Length: 116
Length: 113
Image (cartoon, rainbow over the protein chains, first blue to last red):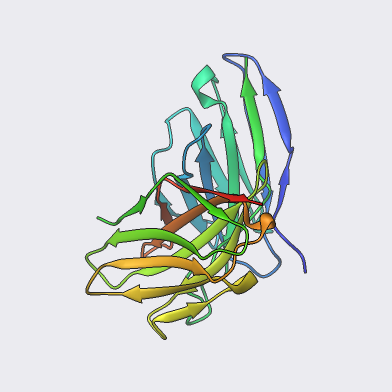
């Protein structure tokens, strides 16, 4: 079965540079979530989109922005990168339209961002 | 506000022994609860979920969890541990509005031969 695709899988950037992470949800899924997982930490919710509209916002820095496009893929844009942004970034998708789906989220493999 | 607490950041069991990973939640509304497993350098894989139906939930690889409202718990169990079960396990609660997941701190399961 098709899974969530994230690209790139690994990314190395320098401080103050920008980065763009991409997420391709499972076909027919209408909701995308972004999470950040620091070393040895639990995943922290950043932002989510439902039907191309922002549906929720968590602890996402103002330097970060995201959107969901007409084909439902999503991009997380990160500017003025800091050392503390080094983390694993997960995208997850779900189908919110189905009663009883209980927001079951399927996670991608993650993008490991290293800021030097 | 919703939150999850996982008791024990590290659990070590012998191969073939019972696995018990503890999770307590706090939620002002009926919660959706999940257990995810994460292998090193990989994404999170859903083990099982509670959606207000049966309180005993069966998942993949013989894992199961029981929702106990009176104890606000959702502990994960497996009758017999395998070496391949060694991983990080996360309990999570979902917001009923938008579905965002709030994770516990995680429990590292070590399986000794």
